[in-house]
Image (cartoon, rainbow, N blue to C red; front, side):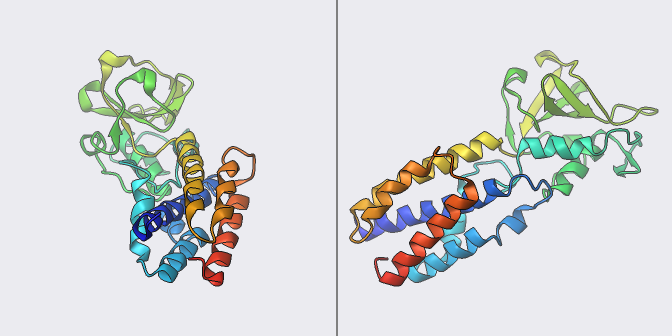
Length: 254
C-alpha cells in the first residue's frame, strides 16, 4: 500500500471516528452539528492528521461527505425530528407563529429543526427544496417533510401512517393519521439521515480498516473489521480505535 493510499484510508477512519461518536450520542436529540464537530472523536482525528502531516480539514471533509446531501452531520436523525415535534403537540395554530406560544405549519417545521441545530427556510416554498427528495410516500421515513395542498401546507411524517402538523386557525399542533396519498403530495424531503443509515456507514468504515493490515506495524488492524456488528457499543468502539491509533502514532508506526 502506497503512502497516498494509506492517507486515504486514514481519512476514512477519521470520518468513521466522527460517525461512531455521533451514533453514541444519538440519544441527545438537542445536540447540534457544531457541537458534534468539537467531539473527542474529531479532536482525535485532527491530532492524528497532524501527526501524519495532513490537515484536519481534509478529515472533516471526509466525514461531511459521508452524510451526502442531508443535514445534521450524522448527529440528528429522523427519529430526533419526530421526538422534538411532539413537544409542540397542543400548541395553538397562529398564522406566522414560530414559537411555543403559537405556530403555523412552516413555523413548526422551522422551530423543530432550529431546536436540533439545523437552519431551514421560514416558508413552505423554501422548505420544499431542502435536503433530498423522496420518490414516494411508500418510501417516507420518520422525520421526512411532506409538502401538500399545492405547496401551501407542510407536515412532518411521524412513521406508522401518522403525521404531525399545525393544521389551521382555531386548531392545535396535532399528531394525526396521514390523510395524504401520492397524488396529493408536491414533494417529500429528507433533511436528516435515518439512524440505520448512520449505523451502516460506521459498519462499512470499520470493515474497510482491514485493508490497512498490509502496512508495516499495522497488522493488528485486520481484526478491527470484527467490531462491526459485534455488539460492542459505539462509545467503546471509539475508545478502542483512539487507543490503538494513539499507540501506533507514539510507536512510530504511523
